[in-house]
Image (tube, rainbow, N blue to C red; front, top):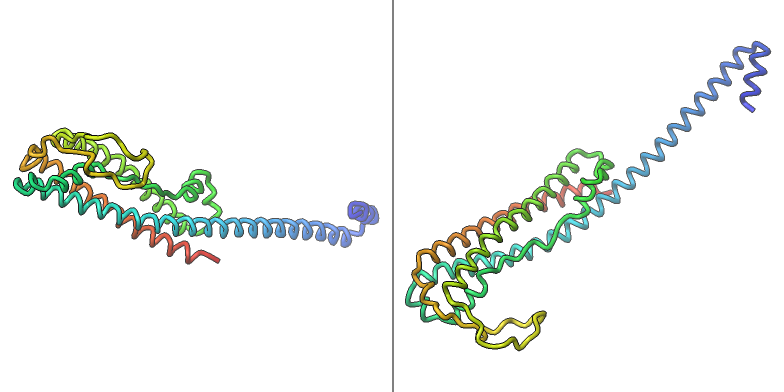
Length: 247
């Protein structure tokens, strides 16, 4: 229709009408492009807001789990400190058999972090994070996921040392089982100290190698707790940043 009008105006040499027809075409195309861009921008904004909400809920959940994890490792740190001090007192070390058994059995405790930021990690790996236009928020996502991965790497590094010390302690103390298991392996009931005995507990007492190994693991535990406290601060900062970008 419009093409026929333009053709007729050209034949009639009505250049003003031809100009108006072309102007209508150009304006129409421009408006169409602008509407398409506006719709695309609205869709991207909606996707960005949805992603921010998901990231916010994810980090709130992780923050709770991290706090519980920190408390667990603080308790382990306390146990490690008490064990490292106990073996330096030869008389007390030899007399407190049940306490020593409990310490020996728990020396390998070093639970891994069972939480992560999968939504943030996926957004980074797939490029989805690019729909968030705020550089500050994108940087926070990157830095926080890096910190979480660092914690996991540190656990993998430290668990090897803990396992080596556990093996040394078990061997030196002569840890032995003196009865069959009366509960299934999946039982949540606490283990009975009576089921175990230390055949050579005296080898732990005032033993410089044992004292050094336990002291080293205690220091390692302190460092690990310090890492977690730093990450907790980072998570709190990340959470506040996300909150500021929520609609």
